[in-house]
Image 1: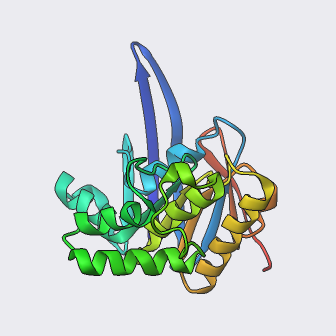
Image 2: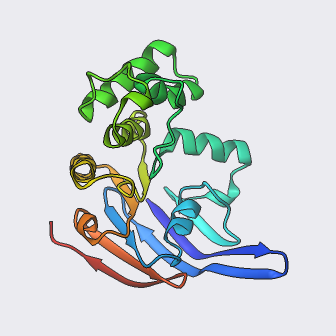
Image 3: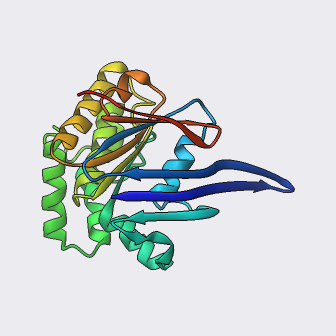
Length: 226
């Protein structure tokens, strides 16, 4: 599903150059649930942002379904993100003036899906994660856990090939975090490929493979029994 070759990322601040990713090689198979772990500053989120096409690597290649993402134009890459990938962020990233179903439908409408079909898919996605009674609530009328569930519904409404999650439980209490992780577990059982950054050992146990980063490199990988 994903293959990363010699991935490097540098950040420049004046004359200061910081090498965050230092030649990472990585493969994720279709249907895997992978947790990326490591201490703060290890490069976890930066790695996720490169793989998910939200940022450009300084060097290296990223293949998704055997297609080199470097070969895509900016517009092609944007369409690929919209149609093939799903994203869940720790800050939910919902539009405050839109209700739950509007937030979920928006990316579908951006893919030129008809309004009727977009709202149908949005409603189905919200029902799937247990928010069928909160379709018309604004984000301000939802708890943090419910807002994160809306963001998951938005990420899965178009049935993405890969779901990327960056610290999805970071701003949630324990009960809401467990609800979110159980949703991921059920999505994975249904065949969804998930790559998640987390610093919480408890929630990494939901993944079948753990990848540890340290100082911009993969230092350990292990498979977990489910």
